[in-house]
Length: 113
Image 1 (tube, rainbow, N blue to C red):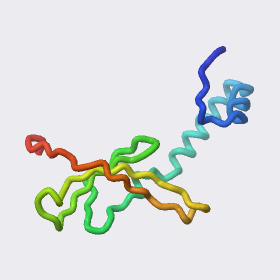
Image 2 (image 1 turned 30 degrees about the horizontal axis):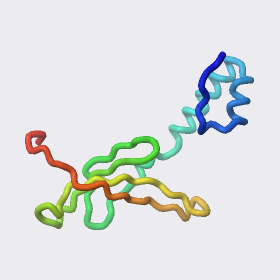
Image 3 (image 1 turned 180 degrees about the vertical axis):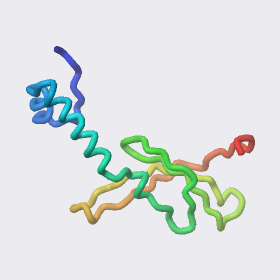
Image 4 (image 1 turned 120 degrees about the vertical axis):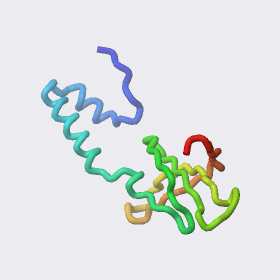
């Protein structure tokens, strides 16, 4: 069988999967799905920064888009504003932080309300 192989799967894992029986592959899939379910999603851990309220969060696998508003501000300074948020691990798991990349002001559709 000639299937394209994803680049982000380690060669040792690819080799082990290719050598597995159907029963072992099914058990591996169930195990991987359980692991994914047990890990907290980035969207669950993102908290608003000071002076901002999160309006919407959308997980895109490699990053998360976050829409915020600043309720204490007026006019255009209130938002909403879009950010791309990514977790950047530190030297050990406890030193990581969220990096917020400003994407711009979000157009408000007045008929959507």
